[in-house]
Image (tube, rainbow, N blue to C red; front, side, top):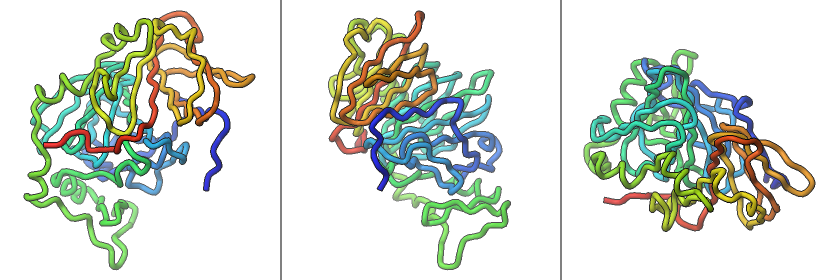
Length: 322
């Protein structure tokens, strides 16, 4: 059993270790240049090559995806919540059985609480390399990824097979399914009926918070972004708040009895504890252990934004039911 840290654990943006073979579409043209990062918790990677930066979990997982322009993540679903915020670039999110039920474009600082139980995908539509940060519900992130059948079939044509155990086998590396192990079965037509086709009008107003709205609502105190009585009214097993320079951070000296994750989106933030302090930059992830007194505040002048994530006693999903 891993011993709990008594000080914040920081994973720097520049120190993130990518996995380029994390998922079944790693060889599929159009999806073969993406990078997956598992930052806190085991995540949902299907590859044994995935590096995990912090293995202990606070009741949820933190990950990230980096993709060049035009690169997409194929249609999939999860059994628990999946929340993304855009750290760098411009991204199109799309959803539905064939990816045409609805879509929305997110800019830097926007956040999307994707309804559990729908197929979803995303692509970098900007002009430069982009990155999105992810929060996944549950300690084990729901036990993996559920792929749309056509994604599995396309992957097989390019040498990747997902076993019923949830592990990928790559024919390009000379790998094949071990004796007694069968491929992950495709979803049947009956099973596919359980995945709703939600239109943009059902999703965009209820599950997306824009950067400038969060900045406006965070003047004086943190803006409640995801949770009960929040901008996005949801209970996915964690809650999210947005803190800006206008949130009166002079009073942000506190101690709580659960884990907390701090994720800057803009500017530099100082976290102080005991007789020590450190500075967080956009793309850094800071896991603060329970019971540690802390102070958070902008470290320099100029715009500053930070997401604060805490686990709750709510189940990790689903967040939407037909």
